[in-house]
Length: 287
Ligand code: COA
Ligand code: MG
Image 1 (cartoon, rainbow, N blue to C red):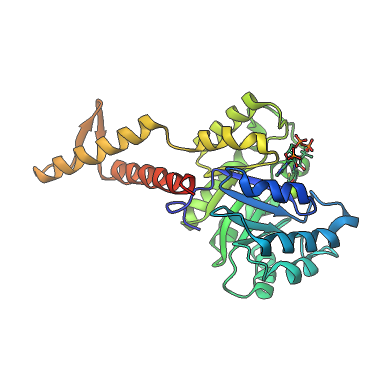
Image 2 (image 1 turned 180 degrees about the horizontal axis):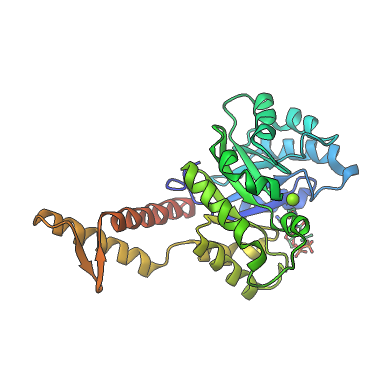
């Protein structure tokens, strides 16, 4: 799950029970899909959803999109059966909700075996406190902010600036980065018909360092893809920074100046990351 080789800008939730949405996703320009068996599926619909989802995954047609299956927590009556039904269905990762500690992850890892990557819903206060150890778990490759559950558990207000969630969001990004190579995905924007509000929240999540955002509706994909992609001027600047730095190095200097700003080795690393992301996005689009 390397963000240098594949993008995770738009991560769309699809209820595992909805045939129409499972079909539609095969042609949506999202980078990843979370096939949901948890909160998007009513209790009485869960057994059928497992079957519908396993069939859709076996049928395939999702192209380069990452396929992530969100099961129910292992402490619920559905969790174990979800694992049995979906672990060999061809998903790229299993997403575990309501995690509190690394041992919750261990329980799932024991059932999946060592080869299936695990993503974790970061959606309880205890989980956020344990973020570093959870992200460092050998099998964890992605963290997803569960902002609706966090808001509920924190008892905080829902605000456009997300100030009450800021500590949690930043701890999630910090944990992912401290662990290296772990993907960090922001929570959903509930008003799915409000494109301007979504854009602002995407840009906030991007500025905080998230790789992408979880979405609930196809109408949210395009805005999100744009917000989390490097802009053309960022790509151009990155190219010029790398070239200028190489030139300086060749003439025995450790730094360069581009557009009035210093360019050191660390800026080159950041510039290379921008170019790698742009290349990964281009490859995704070339499908
Ligand atoms: N993924 C893929 N396709 C979706 C979709 C999704 N998440 N949500 C809607 N669609 C499809 C619909 O099937 C419909 O397709 P069609 O026109 O080809 O038949 C089209 O997009 C338009 O849907 P629309 O009528 O605008 O949405 P809705 O009012 O039926 O449903 C929601 C709105 C929010 C209930 C629905 O988008 C949804 O279930 N989202 C996912 C919720 C979820 O997974 N929550 C868990 C995590 S928070
Ligand atoms: Mg949740």
